[in-house]
Image (tube, rainbow, N blue to C red; front, side, top):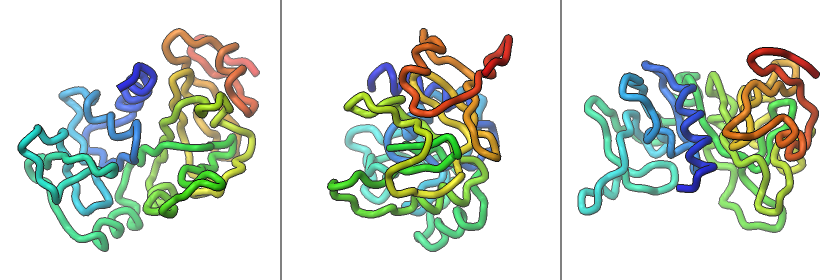
Length: 218
């Protein structure tokens, strides 16, 4: 685990409350359970067909039928329930998820999310991401601020095919936390680590307001 991913996962874990039913997407979101405080008793749902995900399975104790979204072997907590994919997606489509934590290739100032395909790159398809993004009561994006080439992932308008429109409410990166206004527009609500507002502006491809604790400015 690299430091940036750890920073993002630790911050995202603060968005989970006891009693929440949450879904964790592939990548950094799957690190959240490692940073949940002991007093936070949430229920983790995975599209594979269960609620009640526990920690990673120890070597030699893996059950090949129990994996997370990335195919890692995990355990089930006491009281967990397993079912087929139809029931799993009924939970999603029925609006039973309090939060979905998803990665992103691009996310824009209107809360549009693109997280499934890059032009000229093979992709297995949008998968369950579009269901999660549309139906979860709250969608939180966890992503590096820029891609590997240094281009901003937070942009004015997504250029890649959308996973879902106007679905994101919060964006967490290694530099900043942004809230997305219901009518569109970004607000910088928190700086991460040693980042400054200038650092965030230099790495963000969209305009944003500043609503940090202690003052508000444009």
